Amino acid sequence: MALKAFEDRILTDLLPTFCDDPTRAWGSDGFRRDWERVSEADAEDFLLGIDNGLVRHVERGLYRAPRSCASEQFFWSGPKNVSPRAITLWIEPIITVAVLARLHFDLGWPKDLLGTQSADWAFDVTAFLRPHLTNEHIACEVKKTTAELDQLLALMKSFGATPDAEQPARPKELNAFRKVRALRNRKPPVFWAVGPNRSSYVFDVLYGSNEHVILSPASPNSLVYTDR
Image (cartoon, rainbow, N blue to C red; front, top):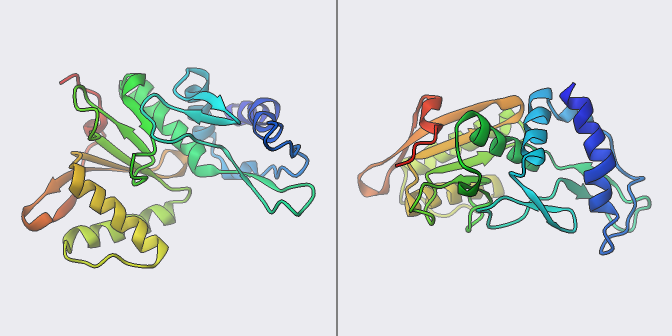
């Protein structure tokens, strides 16, 4: 049910808003309807987020949450020399908006304390507690597959245990390294790793001596908003 509503929303609203913006004017004939990459649960949560203003359209098919440091777009575009231009769903931003809905509706977080994309681009979703609106309370990373999520966590745990590790060059290792560095710098107490179909791992983040960062498996209760 939610997936059909999601498909309709993409085709009648979000896709034309993106593709037909005057700065693009590509048309949407090249859109690939690969709906199987979106789960019913993520479709439902995404629509909740969009329909309840957790992200709002700002310009050119880009959407922004109140405490975002960057806007989200929901489509990838292929090479411009190919006609019609290929357009595909960008799954991670879809799940990102779904995460905002879970934080707000399931876990009690006020809209104005939620954002996407941290200032250093380390985390996909952030949740803040007043009055500490610089360092996030929850740092969340989104991956489009559970395999990518598992690989990220393994790398983060390794870098967390080796504070003197040199910055790696390979992209996946560098991505994990930067997340651990961001945890060290801002010390959020909770890290949430989220994949498709509401799959997730919740961690209390422990900061040991000598810059060690330990991801300690935690109850989902660690994600619940409390007005401290």
